[in-house]
Image (cartoon, rainbow, N blue to C red; front, side):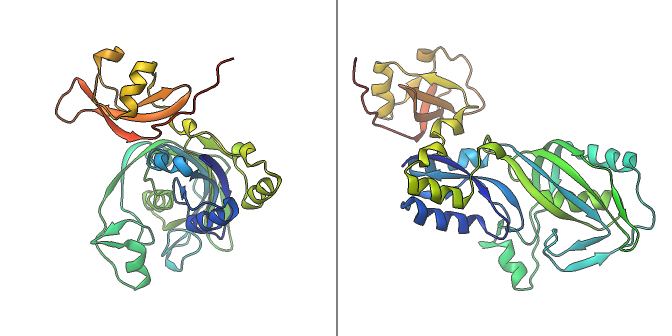
Length: 313
């Protein structure tokens, strides 16, 4: 079984929990996920199966779309609603939509983030959440994130009793963006402690809500022998990459991992992304620029080196 399964991860489960359960359901060990989702977050989690695991890193690199809720008035240890409160400041006056929108707009573009302590980023060989659980703090490396859009989607709601203010939002962002931290940093710009009170991932790896299936639906499809209804081809993960369809002669070279001339494919300038080579409609290899010779292409990852021959009519 090879392909990509857009899974709808439910809340209360880790991404690894999903992989563990799917290995049993699909009866295969070669299963991996294309982008971690926190336990409190639901949404689209691309699952790579069989040869699909070879494209995991490219799914992780893709842009994502989230919708959620930001709450001003208190911050937490985890930067979301699951953590313990660490700072409180009453929102005595509800902020206007214009005030909120102006600050949200300032986050569009390339920004700097400091990863939350409860995250999987490694520092000195240990993940940050390991330090956090041990009650330790360490210096965290600043990272760059890219925000394509960040907009409020509902009117702000002011809670007179709790002295908090919340609103829903949608964000389109690049790889490695911590939406929890985005909420906290936004609050700081508005001069209030804040946290991400809810989050759902709508799009990841090019797969959206409408394509996603739950674990129970996967089990049902497996029992009926209909899992292919939910399984997406590996090729879907590379649809944004430059594509070249190989001739029979070129396929013989590619399947043996040969270095190739850019000119032989009419390439005058190397694209920013890797080039996806296809043969008979199947993704077979990813090539990038040779590290020493600018006019040559070198294999970056072999996906398939065998293609079943289609019987001639």
